[in-house]
Image (cartoon, rainbow, N blue to C red; front, side, top):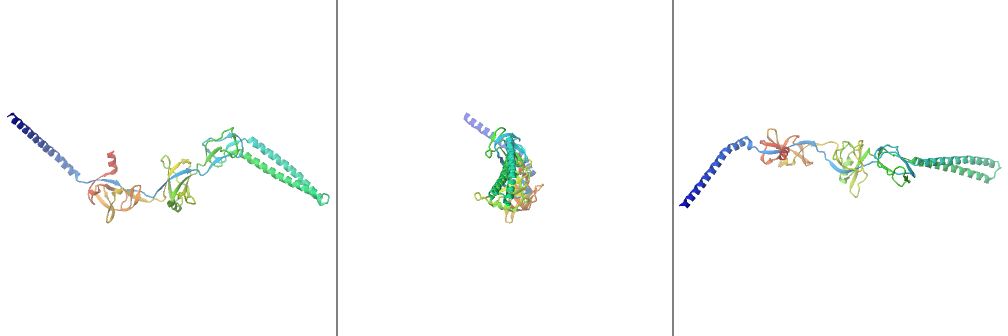
Length: 385
């Protein structure tokens, strides 16, 4: 009897639990159903789409090359005379002007050589005067039959040798003066001078060592090579037909246009490339010789066009089209004429003016004239972050 009572109690308990669960479920259903209905009435059946803005911009074709900055002029200062360095007259790393004296090499000795050559010239000139008089005298006597032919020949020979001695002395004097000038090593052009490789008191030999190096910093040249297929682009343009931008090593653009450019006279047969050289004034010396920059080239005349996300483009038998959404959420089908790609975007030649909101996601949910709930892709990305 007790077993039967326990079984009946279990049955009643289970029945009560089932009734409570059904009641709770029904209660929740009656409470939540009005809210869901309210949401549907508020637009739950309106499709949600993602849109991006059509942008009007310059889509001129661009070419990008790695280029090296190089000095148009550079020189290693090498002594032309030997001697001890008396003075170093520049600040290392500074700008020196054309004609500035940079080094002075043992001038006293070369000044003495000039004086010695002047004295030798004076002696040769005095001897020339004497021999010329003797020659003229012997010539007059010979014409009167008072002097022999051999005496005249001897006087003439002495006179000619004296003339040669004067010419030689004059040349030696010029050489001495040139050597004296070379004791002052001057800047051949305006530029940046580097480290002094020799300081005061050191002995230098002519044509054997570099004293310092000067490079021209302004103007300066940017050089790079283009494939042979691009070579004809540069042949067709002058400096006014090409727009250049330089991306510096610090990832900043150089705010200066090139002053001129030229291409080399032949293609390198080993690399099938053509060297191109751009010249910049470089007044603020932002371009440093030996550094590498990125050259971005495009036609000087801009080509404006509308660009959109390629995901927005659809095709049918009549061609390409996109869906746009206005401020009221109304969808409009727009037929478009397409061109190539620009920086990952689709170029649209006609059909869009720019600033339209173009559907890029949820296209399968919409038709022409439908109403949608649109969100910008950029806003969705920010919310996801």
